[in-house]
Image 1 (cartoon, rainbow, N blue to C red):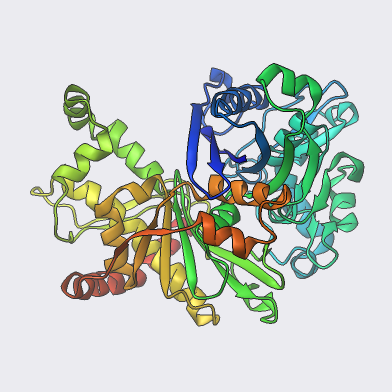
Image 2: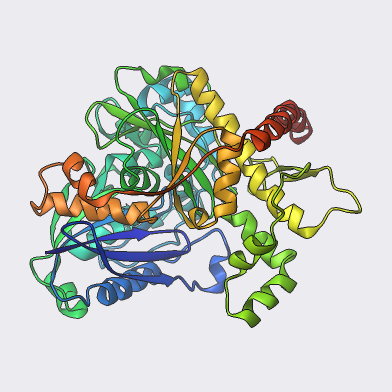
Length: 497
């Protein structure tokens, strides 16, 4: 019996097929090619759906028919569909600057205190409601034409099964989810002017939606008995896939951005996170929440380097038939740099978000090499996330070890840098695509292969390699980090002028 996990990301989607013992049998990936009009801040839902169909069709070419498929996705970006299931707008990504005027209206109507009581998060322009309100301001008729408002997870679940449902973890990314009632907030939606009936049904993570639609099964060569399962928002999904089920362990997911997610018990009231932009999300494990610190720039910084500074090394890598990042790992300086990079290429992330923040390099000299800059980018985002970990520690949420996943987990140099800067063990996993693995596990539970998440995780999740802090490098990084922390508020003063 085989199951699949589907992760719908910002730049591409991947479908992974697993045996009932968690062995990876096959996977397929497609990078989206969007129309030029999308730019780098919008998506095209129809393109995403086509790519999803292609990866499911390819990944399903295994000996046994798929019995279940779980779906995870990025957060925030949403599409309005008409009665014929055709998109009425392009999903807007969270880091797009649009939405400030709209969230200001919501704050003016309800106040930050009441909004926090409902959502357990501070209001920001990154959330779904602000982007949909912007669309409504642009075209007041659009909401009248809409039959569904879907984020990418429930969009794909709906297109596969015909059932519109969204899990709690992703629903929180809309800023319309009432954490007390575990459903949509009438107060917030009334202020936004978004009809409640457009939204998907809110369900716990891992809830089956139903069997795949007949026409989809025939088009993709799937069994009509394929059960479609609602997974999670991509960061909580990666947390599940890394086996982070209890306090003390963090899931470090490095893709375009970098996010460290951890778990805390529900009896610890989440009000102490009120002063920050840190989220509080109901988790798949009973009576627990997840929370996260993140940098908008993670692997995205290295893509910037490749495009702007790494053309020569990219040429060498191509001639040798290896990847650009593998080439950079070969020539990376082995010792820490004295550079400080503040990685605010897309603004500053949680716990103290600052949309006007911009990247800053301190310590450049005439002798600085491009390879040192590359290493300093890795160091910079790690300093930034150490600040987040220290903030969590001050609130009583202590992370003692990390489990790394995503593209960044393939770089041994970066993993060692993290271990040295954080001062804790960093583990890689046998299966690095934690979001896909989590969805595979949730599908396995839904079809009855395993009774619960703990038993499924024992079969699916295994640590591969551990990176321990080097005492000498850690001592150097501690001094650099102290300087980094001193300079951050001074940079804030500059951004605020």
